[in-house]
Length: 421
Image 1 (cartoon, rainbow, N blue to C red):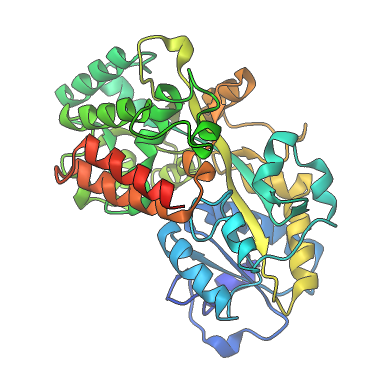
Image 2 (image 1 turned 135 degrees about the vertical axis):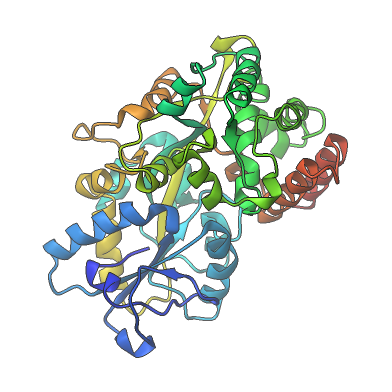
């Protein structure tokens, strides 16, 4: 997650428990001395982190920073193991809540995160974002961006099929038909990458669950609601309907996140249901491609459409870092107006700590509008009580899309895993 541009000239051996994707070059463990700040970041945030690191390096010419990048699945599985072995990076990506093994509350409970409460950025974190960064009365993460989940599409491909952004469920299904008639699929989908499985039903559940029950997550935690007896059933049924209608790639299990991005970039798919930061990955694959975005409708009352919107990337400091002073200085910079704006300027995201100097990319207009209207909801796993629920969700959606499970079975499995937590 953190690396000065010099790290891209010399590969860094990651401190995680497995081989991760570095920024290029060649090197060995001996190429990193004890004074180098080691950062591990999500590969989807490469451009954002590169911009922040370059600016930090200019302001701190004596600093040595090496960034290693990895996919979400690798980070969530390997990062906790690396930290527990005492070999973890100094600064690293963390997720809000309890939702996965590399989430803030999960890592803090294991004693892996340094307390950041004394840093200046803490005073400027918005009230509705503080829960992402805090455990009890202390702050353990700096939020880096605010993202959304929606349908990202190529404006050219949309024109080619004679379509427009749908506002209702019926219009969405009609758009699927138009895409197929035009020789494309509406949404590229590659669930071989486990974390991709969750995005479509998160986008649907924002409306089917939270539009009428905004306190649903609290009701679940208090034992007054379940997956099975809620709008999650409708969200999953609609997920299946989209698949059976031919709205997704013909073989979702045979594709990955990377192939889905390429399908949009090369025009085989009109778009993809993804986190907003994926706009930068698409334009990197197809420079100059103009993109749009819309909240995925799940009903025929457009006024009720909600959109998942939340802090997507955050960073923590290793509580046992041998280079903690530089680590704290780096995350302080990341929390500054300059750091926030650099991180989000070309990433398809908004600053998690807002400031008046930032201008949002036009593609983010739907997210900004839903945020202002109060029709965003947190990413669902951020509010789940343990990492196992999300992992079970990955498995169950893969089974659902392949016909090895039905909606009832998925809901039962999720409720059982939730209650075990």
